[in-house]
Amino acid sequence: MNFKEKIFVNKRLDDLETKLVKSFLEKIDIQSYLEDYFVYIYLHEDSFLEIYSVENKHIQEISKEFNITNKMSMEYLKDKTEIEQELNEIFYWNGINNIKKYVPVLSDDNRIEYADFNVYAEGIADAIRILNDFDFYEYIYINDVDEEI
Picture 1 (cartoon, rainbow, N blue to C red):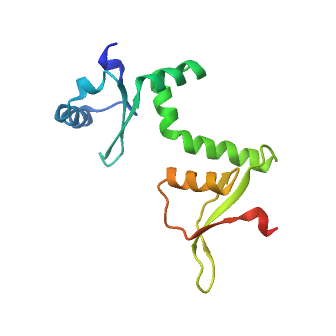
Picture 2 (tube, one colour; picture 1 turned 60 degrees about the vertical axis):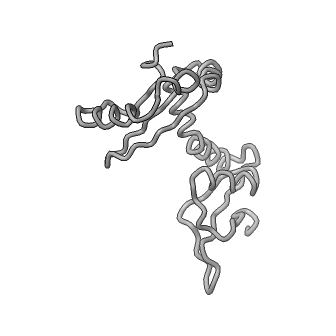
C-alpha cells in the first residue's frame, strides 16, 4: 500500500500548514510506522497538532463494516464518543435502549454545582467511561437525573 494513502489530515492545508506537518513527520520514523498503522493528523486553528494512529486491521474492519473509506474510518474513531452521545441522547428522549441521563457533580459543599452538560449512557460505569473518553475528571460523583424524579 502506498504510504501516502495511510496519512490523513482533517483539512486542506495551506503552504505554511503543509510545512508544519511535513516538519513534524520528518522528525519521526513515519515510514516504518506506516507499515502497521494508519495516521490521522488533526490540525487546530492555533496550529496545534493532534496525531491519532490506529492499526491497519482495525481500520480495514471498520471500513468494510460501514462501507466507508479508510479516512472516514479514522474520523469515525476520533469522534466515536461524540457520535455515541448524540445517538444516546436521541434514544433517551424517545425511550429507546434504557438510556439514562447523568450529570457530573462538580461541588457538593453548601449547594450542589453541576457540570454544564449531561452524559447519556446505559449505566453509571458506561457514563464514567464516556467522561474518561472526553478527558473530563473534575467531578466528585455522577447524578442519575432520572432517579430524582
